[in-house]
Length: 108
Image (cartoon, rainbow, N blue to C red; front, top):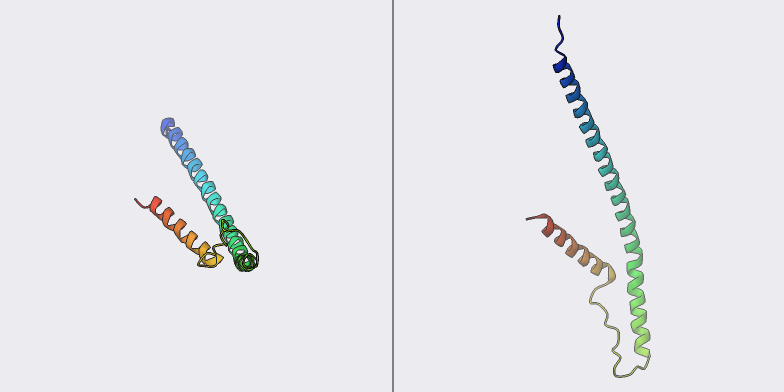
């Protein structure tokens, strides 16, 4: 029985290269999953912070408007223009605009 060493070496190299590529693909997949989980955790923190700070910002804006209405100011100073929506609504609008921009960049 004779062995064809060219085929044996060729098959061994092929298996080695394939296993290296599979290992690299597995490591890349694990990295992507860990990044996704960190992004999800950060988004949860951001949404929680936003829900706490949004009403406080609205309250501060109302107090500033109240204070400015009691302060005498010159003709060249305009009173504070309050936005037509609260902070959370404005953030949601900006998030929607950003999502639309990202989708337009991704889609041809």
